[in-house]
Image (cartoon, rainbow, N blue to C red; front, side, top):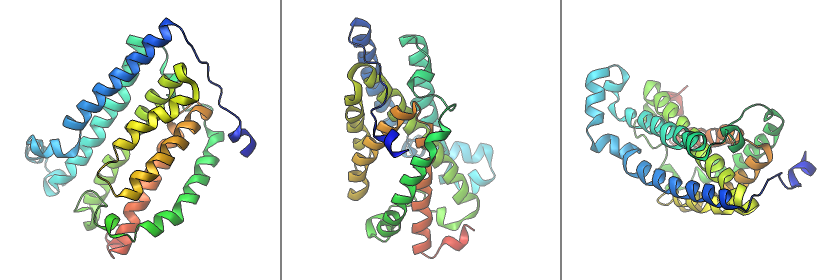
Length: 256
């Protein structure tokens, strides 16, 4: 497994007019989608726009009892739309290719899951350690009522998890595969630049770790020809951090 991991991924690099055009489409459409998502796809827009009150009054139930949790469900939904479905539509209708060639595949990826599982085990002691930092204790979970447990916690985590589907599809799928088709392995560090930038504002150790994570997950996506295993790793790490913080705040009993 290790020997296979160290061997370069198979990448068909094209250097023609069509390849240049496709790379331009990927870079510019990714820039526009990042812009749209930043201003209209995040939880703060859900609150500013008044959606928080409209959803609470029209849907009731947990969304009325915990109105803020809807912001994270909205976050997950817009991530799926803008980071997963829109790039797939661009691949199909503008670039005219199959999303399977851009990491949108599950078949054949099972053999790569042990590597991702090993990465999680390596990360676990680091997560336990940094969860004691004040910068993490005051930052996670994002939803301030998640510590109450029940529907407040699980609805938040549901939206939070779906947000990572979009992250992996966009960065390790659309950008990584789109750039690698023109620039080879150089596409991985090129993708890592905007990926790290979306972490600005988070605790500094996490933003720095995003450099390593971006390079590793991008490389592994090309090796496995899929971004799907990265979703499970990313979700696992994120939820583990939330649970560790709640444990340190003596609120984990509200969840289980």
